Length: 551
Image (cartoon, rainbow, N blue to C red; front, top):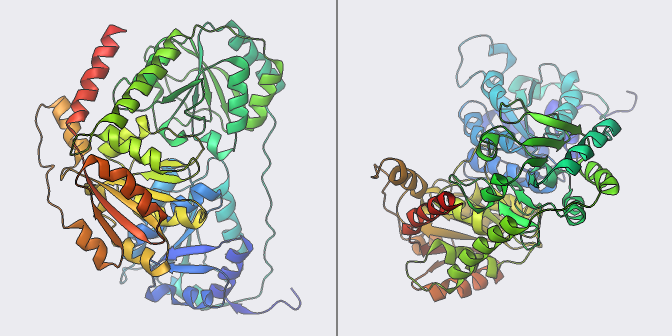
């Protein structure tokens, strides 16, 4: 270690982050992390101070999702660390790479009851892949390298680096650890041959594509495989865009709380190719209720154990490599297209009816159609959790991977507004829209100030109904009445203007699309309040029930 400079652990930690290629850190200053912040003053890494640590974790979560590089967030000990938990959990359950940097009280008081100290390692352990506490300076380079390697390896998720304040001041002289790239394993030849026998024997094969396809950048391989085999494809909510919705073989998304159009394709199938599918977001029991379908699992990871996910064949390896290898050897298949055509017809008719509907307040279908008309194919919409999510997830046509972002493993509210900041930083050349209900909006609306201060432009579209709409929907379906779901709202236009942002109030159906286009063209934050008529919720579930009975 001759000629290596001596510095404190905080300074060296920042050097390690630079070595990992970190561009942004989102967080809030605290007493115990002041030395990290001081070191960042001399770094090329941009620190973005936020208004709540939850916002910081959602920004890092979305940035990591879109770039494949771990998003980084920073908090102090105790309450600051606790506030990071929600976004860190979302990254873990939705499989997005995230590294949380958390300060801690000194090692010299960690063994006893002490001010603001909670057991951070134990607290983060259930919602992370790995945690490391820097107890001695010499461990710093290994802990940082491991945190990023684990966070970014399949399946990606959350790791946590905990730095006690006394260790942060200690001196260190050490080299940085070079970055090594994990290579995909090749699929097993014997498993490929077994899979081909099952596919060739299938009468009605179907593909369920999950977010692993997006993470593996395997969309092109999936499209080519489907085109060669004529096997139709349905995507999960997290995989929207992994297979383009305007493709002739697309069955749209599967994952709605009732038997939706895409489920009809699974009802008729005998064999399911689960490609990059993660069970956490939509249980196999929903599409394989009898447990009688033959399942071929194609993923970088082995399959999760589930009584409705019993494998005929499991192929572990790179998804693109596996699909290409199967496509090279597969024989032409025959499939009856009647059900697939009916599914696409139902989807198209509902969407087109929404385009023509001029009712006010706006029907959800009209809002979805106008968002699609305003956004380019590569532009990014973040669909927050709630009733609005259900309409966006099942009806919004998506043509590119990771352009309709949904929280579906944790399915948390309020990720989309701070997430929009992370999305815009990841793709500054794209338009970004946060689509959310009024219930979710006020949970993290303080980050509008962060966006205005940092000059990060995006649009917020609020679906206004003054209810926790999804819960009301479930209550009406299952209990026949609503309970404690109504609230009131502030004046959203005045609130936007108080931040220096633009505010718009929609007063007629014809106003939404031109307002969206105008707001998306502006170089600022815009908030659009759009009244929505959620009486369509019950009509939809009634219609789906009738269709299910008829088929």
